[in-house]
Length: 274
Length: 261
Image 1 (cartoon, rainbow over the protein chains, first blue to last red):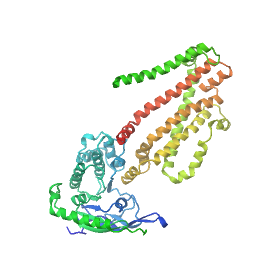
Image 2: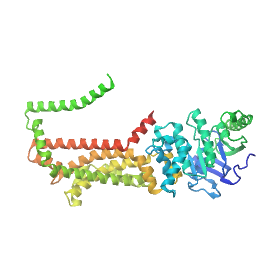
Image 3: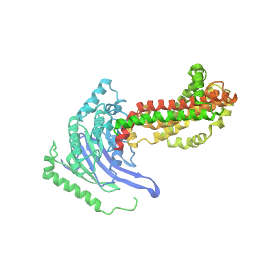
Image 4: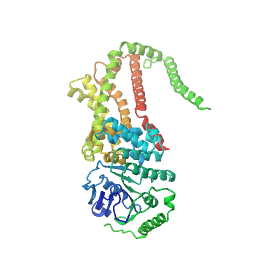
């Protein structure tokens, strides 16, 4: 696929248009995100990478309707996002803080379904199916804190899946688990994406991860943030931790994105607030 | 020493120390022969005579009712006010000076006015007085507990569309509950103090009233028996509360142990 083109079946799912976010006012004004535009096609997997502190999380929170952008807009299926839309689910980096420690795994996954118009049987089915999809059926009656970090993040993913969103936003979801667990969770994400036909916008600081997972990789600049380049990832699917990462194309893409970000990090940062 | 032996020793000490203290008290009171410090055995006989159970219904039950009702009102009002105050900075800005003012008020200062305003030395005045001063620990801990909720958890709730009462019932209240419980425990011991204080000031029943009458008639053994009972009441209420908390907040102990490691 050519860079810049939307993947999936060609229809646009999520559009980020001229998005800017400024914090504070007067002397303390910080221009976190200057001007970011890109779109995510229906069924597409788009990763966002950038140097640390470039406002990736801010961008994702704006896309989720949790933060109001200072400039620009976010469109979900052409409709402007002003509050968290029901078609969208968010997986946070801090799994231990986004799960409710007082509720069992079952009730954690079930809670967001309360306000959906579903029968009790339907709810139970969704909860059990999504926990099955992440391989946690055996732990349905455990508390989250009785599980390992990787398992807790799988609970958070199951909760998002049960919510039946069209778009899944993931904010550095595997940044705080060990390397082996991380590979497993990456493959799990690819698998549920196939099973659920879901659109994913995935923020990470890990270049390998972004190329391994994505159809396209959006590379961001330093703050005040712009889009540096949108890199198309033509790697064949299904992807495989060993075979895919052995491909010359993978090494090439990795080096390309790495150079983009490294050049960013070497560039002198502006000390004058915009 | 093995673990079992250590635990047996710990339990043994827990029983042996109070027993030794009581024995020492008895020996000392026998030896001293002071009219102010009747023999422990005399007090125990008096205790059994008064509280098991001839005056139990007449004086202990009213006291317990006042504590229970006053405490319950304080908890309900404290949580109901504390949640919106914890969520809204503006509400706090407006309310905190008032809360801090009344919280700093020494309870005896309000006893006379409570009798005058409520035209009562009965249950209305007692329960109101207890509820008023028990309110503050619950209220302040609820505010703090709600303010301390992890923003990630609130963002999660928001992104999943949890709103209004559902958000309060399913997220805010359980997340703040461990700290609310800490406030409730403080309130419960305050409730015993306020009960004695209000009954001692003006009443026609209750253990505080018995204390007052015994003092006025210079009956020291009943007075000591009342003191013994009040101490036991406070101790047992606290014990009951801890047991209930352990059951209801079992998740919190587990979660804390898991996140500390």
